[in-house]
Structures are given as structure tokens and as C-alpha cells.
Image (cartoon, rainbow, N blue to C red; front, side, top):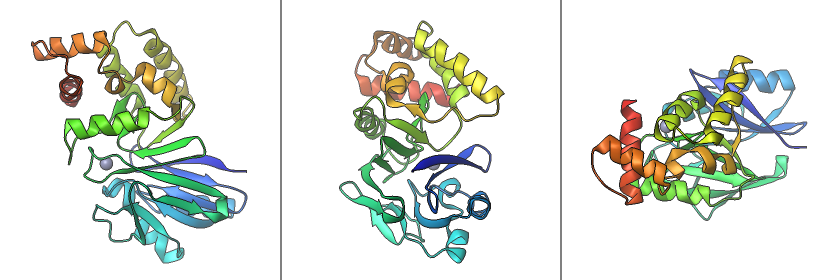
Length: 254
Ligand SMILES: [Zn+2]
């Protein structure tokens, strides 16, 4: 049976680990140590490494993992990741026979120029693009690109589990409440996720249904979000890309 386990890495990264009784694949190993320790403790063999984008906190552990495990390394064709053995892009799929899993690749540029997501087994591994109640910063892409990447992810089924790269949820919810103070689903999410963090548990995965109900970056057509963006800008805009750009900039300063 397939299980998906978070390994904590660096300050607030998660290395998502897909595993069965004998094998494991890891997504975005920013460090090798937590993965090597987990594999040894659970007596698992590494089957594959998947990277969503080139930032060191997502790929920094790959060289050390490859010293011990000769496995395929999947990652975006359009980004400088020296260790890739299988450069991929949208339309490709990643088959991990040891786990009986096939994931499809989606191009989701915006945070970086060729960021990808992996989707399958009702699960989405989306790195630093869609966060729980937030989204990644625009380092190498435009607001328009990020918005269409988020729209592509938001079109997946409600029950899709969202496995993103960082534990940023409580801070993201605090910002989302500034944008949409009257959103009752947000208040409920805050209460639940505070309890999870108080118990030392991840707030992830969330579901896409929850993200659509609470994530301001997926709600740029909601009147309350548009109003808040206008207050922030001191202007009157309604174009969703401009609303998105405004709340992304506001979040950067929050
Ligand atoms: Zn990143």
C-alpha cells in the first residue's frame, strides 16, 4: 500500500516521501540526511528522486543521495539542475514501477521559470507554487504566468491532496484573513491548523477544495478579495491578474 510521509528538512521544508513496504521515492530533497535516516530506519530502498524546481532548498540533497543510491532523478527540463537524469515537462509522465505509481507532469511557471508539479494518486506535489492558503513568490515569472499556473492546479478535483514544499500555513492564513476577514471557512481552518501545529503536526496535505474556499490567490474574482486589493492599492481595479499582482505584492510586505 502506498503511503505519503513528510520528512522535515532545513528550517520549514517538507520532503514528501512516497513509500510502500520496500521502496520509497522522494520529492524535493533539500537535504540528504533526513532521507538517508528514514530509509535506514524503515529499511527502504530509494527508487526515484523528483524535483519541482531548481532552488537549493529543494534539490540540495540530491548529490549526496546519489552517492549511495543510483536512481533516476526527474525534474524540469528548463531549469539548471545538474543532477537530472530525466528532464521532464508537461505531457511527460513519471512511472515508478517499484511503487506502482505513475504521476503526470504539469508546467507551472511563475515562482521559477520552468517549475513543474507532479499529479497522480489523487495527490499534487506542487513545490513552491501553490501553498496551503498562499502561493510562492514571483522570482522568475510574471503575475500572469503564476495566475494561470494556479488556475491549472485549481482545476484539478476537489479531493486532490495538496503536498507543497513548506510549512507556511499559519502565516498564510493570517494574511488571508486580512484580505477576507469575513470568510468563515478561513476562521475554521485557522482553528484546526493551530491545533495541528500545537501538537507538532504538519498542516499538510490540504485539499484543493479547501484551497479554493480559503486561498486568496485562487479567489481573485471574489468581490471581497477585489475590494481588499483596491483598498491596498488605493485604486479601482477588477482585472483578476491585477488583483492577483496587488495581493501578491501586499503579502510580500505583510
Ligand atoms: Zn523555491
